Length: 161
Length: 363
Image (cartoon, rainbow over the protein chains, first blue to last red):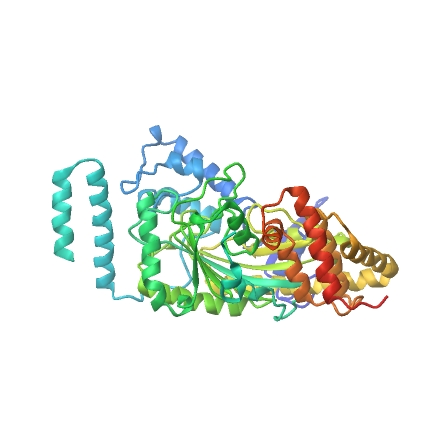
């Protein structure tokens, strides 16, 4: 079916208008619909981050005491609400439930459809990641003077290296 | 001033060359990819040591990455405020990395750096660990995307990225999650502004999943009728789809701008001609030129060149004036830090000189 306005492109928006009890059907293509200010399937909030943070706020308000905290970097939902930024990659796991809902609001979906990542040898990658993690934990253990933990971590790092 | 940008490959200015398609309307096309390294907290949460190690890893792998092999590395955190402003005016670093965000002028994140090559760059320790940027002169989003993809693949093969099977590339701000990609064009739309069509066009962008900003991206004002149009969402559609959508819509915006220019010439020919010649006259002879005024006058002269009302004035010269008439660039030309008043005098002097040297205009 062609667009009622431009008669060039396929109509994808089918609008039912009721004006003074008279029902009319309008069929528009995406571009003509956009020109008339009609939202199409690309439903993008005007102020995504604002809406997003507000949503986090509402969600956090339902959670007693902002309990959710990322075990890796210590970022809490409250921190995220204040800055709009997550602390590390692990935050995505720590706040997964909230984030999935919020990503859907901001982007209209949660599944990445773009370039895949993973050109490196997966085994090497896992080893590197574990080493990174262990070194970070070692740093934090030394800072907090937890020497027994630090010694265990050092052994694990040596083993992997 | 110790930072000498002439030592950088192409001075980081290749994208101003006005060589691409529609370069009288579209100054440049840009692809930006946000990436983080697995195993480190994101820069704003990371300790100084972590940020240093991120930078160290980049320095280590750069010689093995073809796109970065000949890049110059600038430690932004070791630059003076003037030098940081200069890098920002050149579009090499963001406001955030340059430490220019309002109210925190002295705060520069430790280990902040930028790798610069001809028309590509890599910011380190900005909001995300890595911000890959590729510029192209004129309207060439696919060209920029191809080069960005190459650099991304090379870097990703050397360093472990923060990645999630469902969400894609993980970024500090969830508005960038997924592709981490912002595809944008810097476009000059004086015709649509003068015919008052611009509000409708900008409103239309939002319905098409796009957004607009000023000349210097996020948080910057629209000056001189320059707009940066980019994709708004980053998740749920592929890089190519997002870039295609931008190209489709921008093509339409270019058509409407061209149409608006035809209407202006047809319905208000002598008024427009007079307005643009006055802009040229002011730039050619003014002794005191504030930055905003210069930007608006340059916009007028750019339109005059696009309408073929003036000849002998190249788009490249106008592009260069846009960047080099800004305060940190003037300070570099003068060899000292300038007050605002001094910069206004220096700006007038510089613009007069460039126009006198390069323009051969009919009377």
